[in-house]
Image (cartoon, rainbow, N blue to C red):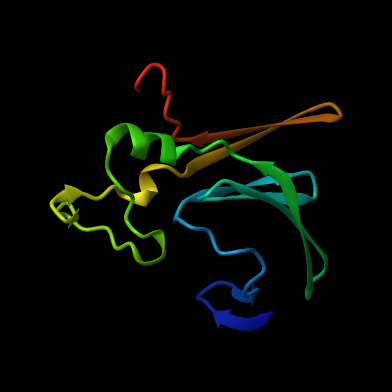
Length: 138
């Protein structure tokens, strides 16, 4: 954890930064929502993490055993085109090409937003994400 004090015009901000608290996502995207006194993070590649603070300097992170059903590989197979290497993808205005074939942007299939709905003792989680329907070709 790293602490920084930012002096602003009206208020001073005490900023706490946590490095490597969550596994690195394969793509950008994702969202954050509050659940009671905890927070839910969905990464761009669909992993879910619940976290909270026991004290100002101690954050607790639990990775949930669920994964958002993002199926970009099915789209890649149907399109007959490969994905760009997700580790070093740099979006460009022009289409990337490899050996004369268009390369797919890996960020087309990612999470976009998150909604948490608490109803009594139950919690429902809705995640907006891309999904390829193979049978409908859409």
